[in-house]
Length: 175
Image (cartoon, rainbow, N blue to C red):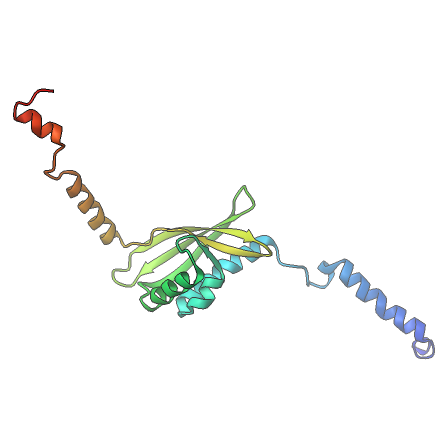
């Protein structure tokens, strides 16, 4: 240890070599940067946690939401959504890599009203240096609402409104 005290250059060299090795080989120190998959997983996790905790501003930071024309409109809608959240539980089931360098998250949403589970998939894409959840109208309606919409649609398709040509032929008008 005596040689470290009397020779300042030796001390500097002995400190510099490990620092240089850590910067060239970050895996040696455990400071390796996060993988794209880990970053994609973190973005969906952050989005879900922010939405569940009622933090609309934070949730909006983690998404690209194509349903809105402006960030103000998006934030307004998010604030309304988190205050009327119909889900008691949100669970990220998996995040898998897609062939185009993006990821897809599968999320299960448990409804407060009847306990039914909606499974939704969200693409996760890289925008600039960060990963964002792509929200573009994924369906989260309850099964009851879906059935109601479907029955209304069926009723409308069997309405008594007929095209004029059909009505005219029944009155003997020839074309």
